[in-house]
Amino acid sequence: MNTIEKYKKYVNISMVDKVQPVVIEKAQGATITDVEGKSYIDCFSGIAVVNAGHCNKKVIEAAKAQMDKLVHCCSYVYYAQPTADLAEKLAQITPGRLQKTFFGSGGAEAIEGALRLAKQFTGKTEFIALQTSFHGRSYATLSVTGNSARKKRGGPYMVGCAFLPAPYCYRCFFELEYPKCQLRCARALEDIIRFDTYDNVAAFIAEPILGEGGIITPPDDYFLEIDKILKKRDILFVVDEVQTGFCRTGKMFGIEHYKVEPDIMAMAKGIADGFPLSGFIAREEIADSFKPGDHLSTFGGNPVSCAASLANIEFLAEQNLAEGALRKGEYIKAQLERLSTKHKLIGEVRGKGLMIGIELIRDNQKMPANTESNKIRDFCRDNGLLIGLGGIYGNVIRIQPPLVISQEQMEEVTRILELALSKI
Ligand SMILES: Cc1ncc(COP(=O)(O)O)c(C=O)c1O
Figure 1 (cartoon, rainbow, N blue to C red):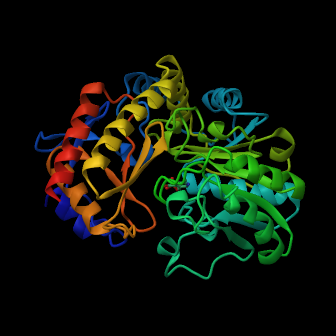
Figure 2 (cartoon, rainbow, N blue to C red):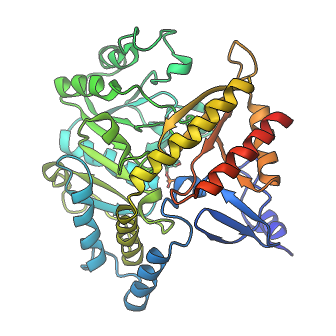
């Protein structure tokens, strides 16, 4: 049996429409090579994970060196140096007063823990999240996910979760226009607290840019308005940086674009360039509200993943990849804007840094073009380009390459996309 046949027989893939028909053998930088030797430019990074590039030499060397010394001890039963070093580094590179990290293995685990900590610190029990958001596949994280497509057949969910209309300007839920709207969607938070909760809200949780929702990019002053309301009501702000972190958006963390200080920040994906690791960091007084027995993770803060993460963060800084992502993102967006004048299928190009969404529409009524987005993905794949899809209607092409993508590769990306648009 070959790999695809074994997957069909032994891997539970019944929960995905299809696995992309590419059997990957190896990858380097922004290039993926399949078992037949065909190469692809990777514009999805294993869902926004390998920001420092596939098999980054510095990261791999750090992980190998750590593997020769210690792979696992449970970093909460015994002390492990890479775990301590990484926690110190995260306190230095995260905004504001965020200081103490709890480590887990995946994004959902980080969000779960962050929510639990918010409850523990505030003594309150409710949460407010955004419609169109995605926070993971565990019970609590699905409970605060604002998209029934992800939640269906899994309910009922946790009580005490209310949802605020998303800052989705292209399809404004209030049918208003920015900036004339005066951020109606942010101001609606007051109404949600008053009418949809029992006024016992521990935290508001949001992604700085809503990734799975379709790279929905809030206006620059959105979180400032939200923050004012949260402060007035003593509600914590939990920022979900799982997808936006580690230079993806052109800053070390996405929330830095919005100039507000979160109380708790969850991170995963790009934290260790592909090694499984996640964490949530909080101000000291918040972090210390966990009491013995409240929380733990067997694999959390794994020494190999932490060593890889430290090397990853060093690499991102040495190569100035935050700045690089901004510059490269501007280049790709300019090319896509050029294409949008020729191809009516492109409704909007948005995003920050190398977190770019292309929303495809069918007519002037902005009918979501989701069949077309699938065809474009297939065409691109057949022509050596891997892209992602997302959006609440499945009609948003996601361009989220490793941040080390070269100019030559970016030119090839736009060439293949243009070809795809002209063939669909
Ligand atoms: C913003 C955000 N939060 C949480 C998660 C869940 O992360 P994981 O799949 O590692 O559990 C994701 C995954 O796509 C995400 O994009």
